[in-house]
Length: 383
Ligand SMILES: Cc1ncc(COP(=O)(O)O)c(C=O)c1O
Image (cartoon, rainbow, N blue to C red; front, side, top):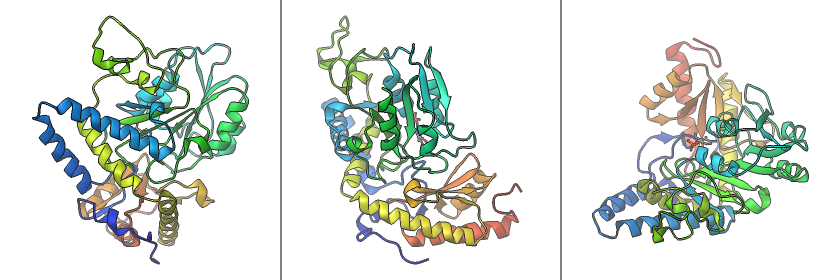
């Protein structure tokens, strides 16, 4: 495979804390020295009287760094425990009456789709195939005057299909619908600018391409305000430190969507991961990952593997989905050989990032070829 590297891939690569080949950032970030140090700092801070102030400072830093990453204002960002809650918060306060349809896709991450299905009075309309294939045109053809909310994964979690969010948002806004984007599979590895995406809400979590730990998600809200969310807590108040149990007020900014104490370890790790990400030029990273994916797909196809790849490189996210009914078995086999991939529902996902080298992809291609010999399985077929 020809070398496909960033101009300076080494600094981030050198921050990885474990050896081996990590191709699983679509599921879990690789450990970095920076997160290790952040967790050590958190454990040190826990035994100090100022722990809660230190923790709040980390949350504030994480909020600021994420706002910078997506071109938003800090007042447009809510810090939440996970993306499913973020979807509920985005839907909160909406009355699903004359305009009662939510447009989503079977390729949506289930937690987000379930938040839509749980909305009383709303009807979810699905676009794209049951099997997960979905195109921008599927969305465009199903937006109607009854559409209230359009939910678009920036990149689908299983097959890495990248949708044209801005085009979908334009069409949604034309009929008066709002747009929710799940950017979990894009943030940290694909440049995102909420003003170019034109979305009204965007969610992502810290434990994948953002190089932090699970336990924290960010919700961007273009226009915070309106009916306050029913799910709330002391951090959703105008002045949480007033500790007034009898008063339920809501600030005009996105912190109105927050609830209770955040996961401290995830907050410290988020700051460390976001600092690594904000040091990168994500346009360059995107170029790097596209070249790596194209080369790996070509080699795997030559080995006889069945690979799901978009015809247009722009419509592909940062991972490659290899069709494999026993994806867990091959994932475990690779894991024993220090190659960490991410099996999910009939595909083995190989995720690339700024730290990935062509040698990593050589290693996984060779290991997959060895697996076929040893297991006597055929690509894409049941054993
Ligand atoms: C696209 C996408 N959205 C959301 C999530 C996670 O959702 P939650 O934070 O609610 O667990 C994942 C995790 O795998 C994901 O891939």
